Length: 254
Length: 149
Image (tube, rainbow over all chains, first blue to last red; front, top):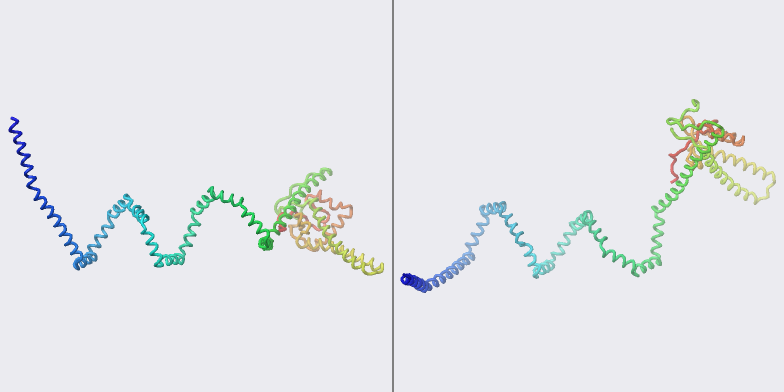
């Protein structure tokens, strides 16, 4: 029973092999035909794109209401969001930025901008429009400046710098130079003669005299009461009543 | 007006300050005038007259000092330092010049019986001395006095 079956399988394998060998030229011809067809199609496309007809057709497509409607629908639809998501997910901007920074493109752009005077024009524009002032005001008024100052003052680097400044001979030399020169004393004279300082000193002196007088007044009031109480006790008179409130009484009625 | 009346010690110190100021000015003037007069050989009569004139001038200066301050601000410099003020007993109005002169005479009278007239301040409910009773004035603490500054 097995001999007829083996014979059948062998015959099938032989048929397949013969078929393969016979189809090889046909496959080769088809592949050559595909490549030739693709080349012809691309050449035709190039010829079409280079032709005046393509230019006119492209202009008509661009100015047609259909293009505008399509663009509006595309921008208003979810396509933009999807594109943005894809850009974000794929870190496209980061990759582009890395690529730009890795190459000399940025340097070329900066060089060309500088050669064209764009940098100076931009700087003039920024200065003329008050952008720097507004940015500085915003920075100084905002919490960032305070945080920056706090961070700076708390940093160990500042402490080391201040400590080294006080330990350095430079500070001693500066102080010695100031004390030996006439400039410091001129400033001191000017400050001492300024109306604000004179006024403050006058207030200070008057304030001291007033303070002394106030203290004396308080003590003499106490002494008034003590002397009066003692005298009345010696004379066996009743203690003095508290002063009445309200209008001062008429002596004729008291 | 609900101010308390100024007591004996405060008023005595204020008066002492005033007398010191009056005497300081008088002594200064007397020294200057005396030095000027000593440059000349004047008869004794003229010197006596000058001394008498000086005494009158001193009294006038003393009286004018107190009368002027009482009748204007109610405060002599001494009273200002001690924070007291002389006002009319009837309503706390400022003292007129006549009242100030009467008060000055009252002070002289109070001083005559060994200053007993001033001791009335210690026993009077409104702390009035003889001069206050005669001139119908009182002396009050003036905490609202303008500061020296």
